[in-house]
Length: 364
Image 1 (cartoon, rainbow, N blue to C red):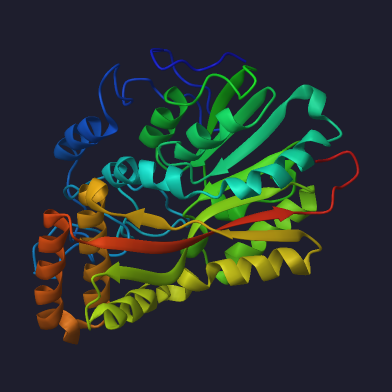
Image 2 (tube, helix red, strand yellow):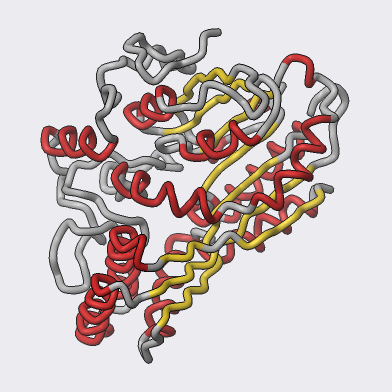
C-alpha cells in the first residue's frame, strides 16, 4: 500500500465505491479555498435554495446557520450523516474547514495523548502498525494534527460522504509519524453513523472532530457500541460545550447563546449535550472515559475566523428565534466592528473525549 504524496496525480485508493478520480483535488500550491470556489461556481444551486443560509441582516448565502460560511449555493457538504432528501442542508463548507484548522489544532487537548499512547503501545497486534479510522474526516485536519504526534507505522482510513473532500484529505495527509515511520491512507465513502464492531475489525483507534454534536442519541450509542464491541479506543475532539465568553460583554450575549444552543438541538441532534450523552454511552459499556477542555481562543490574530463564526452563530440564533432579528442585527454589526478593530476576544468552549474500552480478545 503506497503512501499518498501531495504531488501525486494518480487516483487514491477508496472503499467499496471504487477509485476517487484525482482531478477534483487541489493542485500543487492551490488551496482548498480556491478549488472549492471554482467547483461551487460550476455547480448548480440546490433546488429550493438552502434553508438557514441567511445572515442576521437578511443577506442570503453568507453562512450556514451554526456551521460556518458556505461561499455560495451549490457548495458540497463535508459531512452528511444520514441518507436524507436533497433538501438536507450541508453541515460544513470546505472554506470553513480550512479557515478553522489552525484554531482547531491549537485547541485540541494534548493532555489526552499520553493515556492514548499507553493504550496504543500495548495493543496485541501493534507489530503490524496502527489502523486509524477518521470519521467525518472533511479535509483531513485530524490526521494532519495527530499522525505526526504518534509513533509507529500508521494506516489511516478516512470516512466522509464527499469524494472531493476525501481526495483532498488523502493527498494532504502526513507522510510520516513522530518517529519517521510510514503513514499510508485510504478513503471510504459512507454513513459514519452506521458503524458496527465488524466495520472496526482490526482497528487501533477511531477519531473524529466536531462530529458528536451533529449526532442523535441513537447514533452516539451506535458509535459507542461499535468502538466498545471492537475494543477500539476513540479520540473524539472539539465537541461544542454550549458556552461562549465574549470580551467586552454585551447584554445580548446570553440570549444569542441560548437560542443558538436550541438551534443545535433541532431534529433530535445532541448539540451541546453531545459530550455528556456520549460519555454516558461509553461508560455504560464499560469504557474508561477522560475529558479535557479544548476551547477556541480567538483574538485579533483570528479576525477572519471570528467574523465567519459570528455570522453563523448569530444567524442560527435568529433562525431559532426570529423575534431576535432586530436586536441581533445591531448586535452583529457591533460585534463585527469590534472584530475588525481587533478589540473582540472570544472563548468558544469545546470538549475533547478519550474513550478507552476494555480490550477484546485479539482485538485492540
